[in-house]
Image (tube, rainbow, N blue to C red; front, side):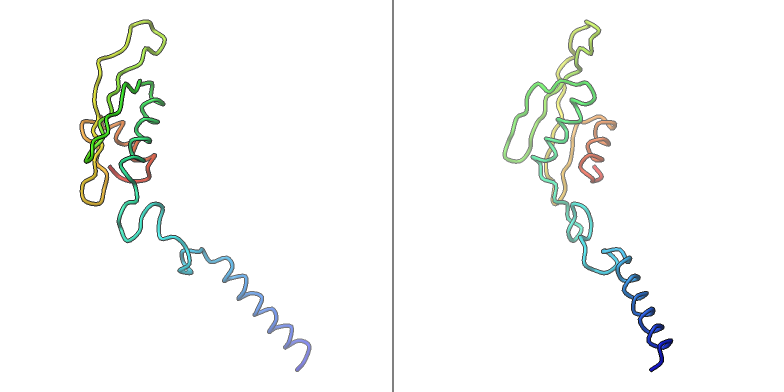
Length: 125
């Protein structure tokens, strides 16, 4: 075998190895099928959704008054914060977080909050 042929075979083998190494993991069938999902079912629990909702509420300037945990749902009571203007707090409002079949549902939540909580959880609410 000549030096040129052996060099060509090594170059071809190296090219194949590089191509396999640069193929995304999901394309090779070895990776996670998606963030937070397995077989199309959400892994988000009600407790995780409540924590995310509280984080979003606090980030947007609301005050979380209390959270009531029931066996089938959680109720988050919140109100508008003072925001430094000396006008006091807003009236208490509630948001219900519950599980329906295989997904988490937010009831009585404004669309803006629902959207941001869904983004934080990585799901569509």
